[in-house]
Length: 125
Image (cartoon, rainbow, N blue to C red; front, side, top):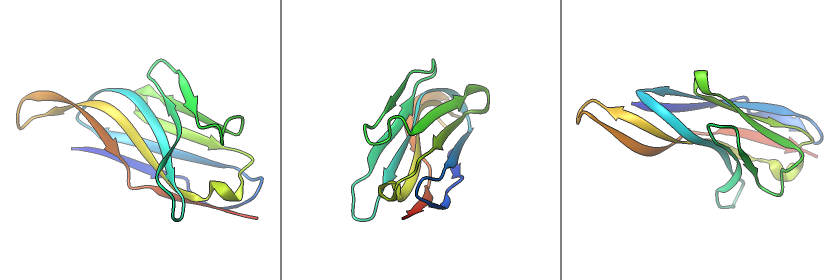
């Protein structure tokens, strides 16, 4: 019923930039927090950045000053502008959203956390 689709990943040299996008679609009543997580080779999935409806943001220390998260509430879309990329940024990046959805099967709204399938970012040195 609800889908999150990421795009914008690819291969880039160290120091370069990429812009990731994630669009949520479905029977969405509202979205509170949206964020980006990443999972590097052999590593546990970790938080990259989050943004609330009102615009408040949080970043992992490793990306502060380099990454910028933003959102378009009208489009249910979150973005991640990544500048000054480093090899350690190499990972699969996943979009996450905490949202309220409408389940027609039970005629009720539910609070859920939804994940996209990920987009791969590779930074070469």
